[in-house]
Image (tube, rainbow, N blue to C red; front, side, top):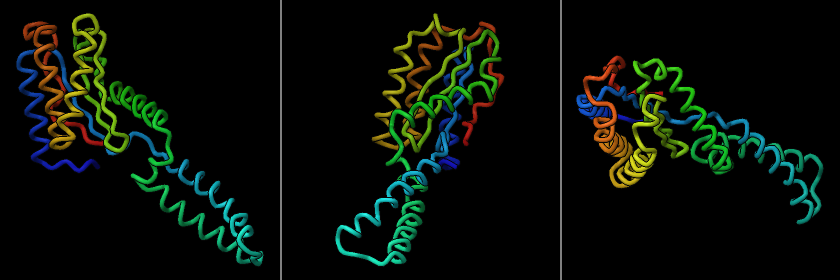
Length: 204
């Protein structure tokens, strides 16, 4: 579970509540420790690297077969242990792959939490995956023509800047506060919408 305190959760919840006072859009925050389990890839890398061990040892000096096999097994076990733990695991995961998996997970969460079923399709989800250092804002079709895509990009930039300076909670709050004025204009209170979902961040 992401290391967010009760005070952190309360701050994010308050920011969502404040933003929704002026908009009919539905805002939900999802924070996950890691979007995808890449441990099998870590094991695969450990296996590949351990295969090279006997050849490296033989180049140095002749070794008994038993010693070579034991050294190979020990190296495999140590590397498998290391490369199946975060953050070492992410050293061997291509960044593009990690981002694609996080983006797919964000869309799954959007559907899982019924964001597409909000009145007038005005759901907005802020998805943050800590291990992959990935954040994205997904807006439903009811907001596509009302809010320029640059608003979401700038909100993610605000999140990244604030997170580096003060932590992930500051970043999430900054992103919500950045989106709030645009949502208030695009989908003001009074339109069909409403606060049907909890403002409490969803922690995975």
